Structure formats: structure tokens, C-alpha cells
Length: 83
Image (cartoon, rainbow, N blue to C red; front, side):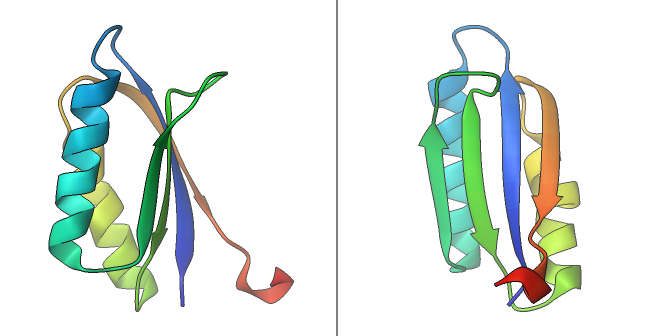
């Protein structure tokens, strides 16, 4: 199953707002996911697993990247051949 890591930088003091919004969006999809606030280069790391590449792409581009207070985001698709 296609998996991606979604790495996010938020506007200052909006980390929890963005974490909660990501969790809400991903919970509605009923797909396996993890969302964690982290210390370091990024503020939030999410792991998302979908049934198809297209479904994963749609979630990231049409839903997650449009969340208010996200300053930047990087999506890293897992190389399925390396599992």
C-alpha cells in the first residue's frame, strides 16, 4: 500500500491547531495514519498509508496542503521496493 511522510513547518504558536486539523482530516479518510509534533527542522511529521497512489496524492494535495497556518510542507513517498 502506498505510504508517505508529510513533514510540516507551521506558523509560530499554531502547531497544535495544525496537528488537530491533520488528525481530523485523516480520521475522516479511515486510512492508517500517525501524526506527531516533533522538535527539530520540522514541527509535525505525519505518516499516511492509502489504498492507491492517486488516493494518497489527493489527500496531500487537495486536503492537507490547504490547511491554514502551514508555512511549508514536504511530502516524501516511501519507496515500496525498499520494504
